[in-house]
Image (cartoon, rainbow, N blue to C red; front, top):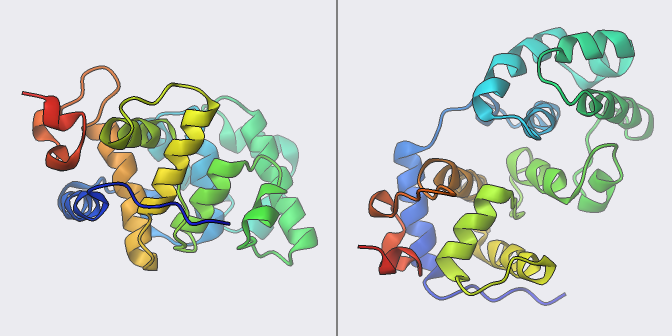
Length: 222
């Protein structure tokens, strides 16, 4: 498989973004752990739910089910009750099924290979990448809506909004990945924070953006 070529200004983009994140990045509870089970819980909760709401439920759920073994042994009704208030209860069912699968097929250890992760209930390409990047500190691209918007504005302003364009943006995100584990973790988190805090969908704060000098969109903003 050919390694994607980094875009123009990639190094400056990464340096500026990381420097900003180390000063301004959000302190979120799931960022204080590398436990793959805890990371998975946060990722399942964050599907279709705002960060502020997830922070209210994340710790409570883990207090009740601190390990994947504890979740695997739980009754479905009890898991649903622990999820109560977050909505989209299919996520809770998938997470419960995932826990039982990991206990049964992987000896209680969440896989480190993308293909194995994607075979788990409720895990797609994005969630698999998140586990690899945030739990195992592998240089895996984690491209959500915020990250796609940042990459598009910074490097692909003429891209259409179709599947081919999304693949191109994911390739660029992969090419930007630092090789060092801790830095790769920071970089992915930084992209998410930039999209959530600065590079907003409707009213981007370009004048406050740390990567503005190396962003195609930002350089045109006055």
